[in-house]
Length: 165
Image 1 (cartoon, rainbow, N blue to C red):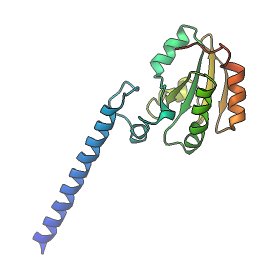
Image 2 (image 1 turned 120 degrees about the vertical axis):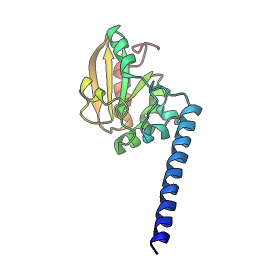
Image 3 (image 1 turned 90 degrees about the vertical axis):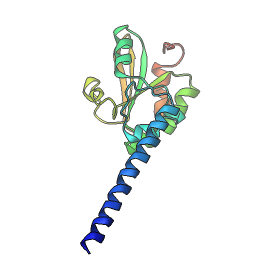
């Protein structure tokens, strides 16, 4: 009886190990098939799941954002967390709107770059921030209506206010 139990436990252990390697292989393949804009090899699963989603392209790393701000550039940044339910509702509205309006809205994933929470005083996600001359001029916190985001873009990021990058 004890031998049977040992065989069953060993079989379960082998299955879990095999499952781990299958999932790891699948994730590495997904990261290899898609351009990884994060500049790091170890990504959270929620981020990996969004790598090929058109709404989550145009990523910016904190280093690249700091460089733009240090250079006094104008930039609009959408701070989001891929596990945030409000972000999951907002992004499919906001990303196409920005594209339709010709806004070069960068996206910064705070799950991957946790220092962004404190470095940019992010209290919650989603948060949309516009910087001019390297300084923050305004932000929109939380899930908002399309009209609110449209007004924000019209105020700060449309008609040549946004530098191309």
